[in-house]
Amino acid sequence: MRKFKEFIIEKLILICGIASIFFVVLIFLFLLKEGLAVFNIVSPFQFLFGKSWYPISDPPQLGILPLILGSLLVTLGAAIISIPIGVGCAIYIAEVAPLKIKEILKAGIELLAAIPSVVLGFIGMVTLVPLVKNIFHLPTGLTALSGSIMLAFMAMPTIVSIAEDALYSVPKNYKEGAFALGATHWQTIYRVMLPAASSGILAAVMLGIGRVIGETMAVMMITGNAAVMPQSILVPVRTLTATIAAEMGEAVVGGEHYFALFAIGIVLFIISFAINVTADLFLHKRK
Amino acid sequence: MFKKGLFVLVMLMFAVPAFAGQGKNSIQIKGSDTMVNLGQAWAEKYMEKNPGDFIAVTGGGSGTGLSSLISASCDIAMSSRNIKDKEIGLANKKGVSPNEIKVALDGLAVVVNPANPVDKLTLDQLAGIFTGRISNWKDVGGKDEKIVVLSREVNSGTHVYFKEHVLRKNDPNNKEEFAPEALMLSSSQAIADEVAGNSSAIGYYGMGYISAKQKPVAIAKNETSEYVEPVIENVINNKYPISRPLFLYTNGSPEGLIQKFVDFVLSEEGQKIVLATDFVPVKK
View 1: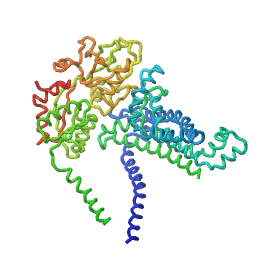
View 2: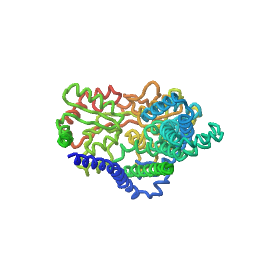
View 3: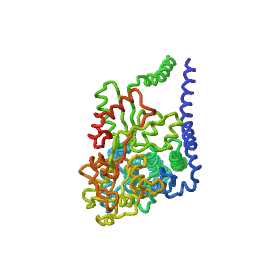
């Protein structure tokens, strides 16, 4: 009887393990099935490099280059803001901060991660958007920059907690060795700890970026959603994710617009898959 | 013991949907954001008069409502535009035959910030502004400021109506589009908020959303005709150039509870609610 129970539990866990992979494969197959149909209407080149996105016109213009650039611009901006702050914060927590402050900071960062993105988007819309408009004397504050700043807040918790983890797991004797050779605290951090933890920190950065590129609600609320080729970071942009979210309701199931949105899903899937794989490679290199 | 528990659990999982499917005294209504307040008001009054019946009203956009009707996930779709041929074809394929009921009229207001000196525009000027040909307020008699064009997302019936009747002037061969620079906002309220806080913005939405924080612009068909304010009487006597019918769509001609609700909507009382929510009744 006990053996039987053991057997059942073992198999149940096995099924759970296989299920997650199974679902990923199913999702990807479904995306492919629905999305590839768009290439009966436009060529892959026209789709990826077309400059006009007018999906409900007749005939529809399905060029997603402005959307890809929009997503990349917002992500790049968020990365530039969140990486230095995030890594700096991780160094402070792992190396410098006294125990008490360390605990408070860690709790605070977890709290930041717990704020739903729609709330961040709403706060950004009310506070950040008018601020950006006034500082840069823009016609509107709904810009890529506003999106980048807000998304930086979303990437930061991921970056800080994983980078801090990486710094923490650098063997103690590296640090002791550096001190023994007469290095100052800063020299130790800069020359020893950071290089030793570099692959983990890179993984942290990649995962943070992965979170940013997939984020939908906040960017939809504060980037203006204009499908225009962005000339600078101070203009409205439309991202891949916001396009799917905003237009899925209108798309007639089985219509060309519907297929195009799924094809955007494939593009997004490939981008975030690539980012995750890169992060994974860095993490494994560490071991 | 363990297995018996599991068995009961599995049985329960199958049983719950079976119970949920019973007792058809509720209607799901879905669609146009423009009509969501109106639908809500109808539903409240109706449920007050018919306790026991339940009506749920949700927004999402006309396209969302119609595609739910086609996929049979709602009973009535609210729409601020006519159903497209493509949608009818798709519905027929799924065994749904959409039935159109005109329930109200709506004037589309074009609004600017109260600080903006511009207070009247022709349809040509509007088309120029929204397609991006006119990009500075000074070209239409305002300050030397870049125009910030606000539009609804493509899932909005208002977006489609505005494009077809203002940008394309009802000409099916006209291929005008909204300027790519136009900001796409996800709700009428978002447009109202942005116009209220931005002195160079221009947007459009149903008359019901006008408040003191926005200034509606008087519209003329062309330069020689009269500029008309978006107010209810001008829509009723057909003077205001941008007004549109609002519809309910049902699957086939309405029956049972759905018919009862549609009758209520078209009754004198239902049409009074139309007027009370700043729309224009179809029947007098």
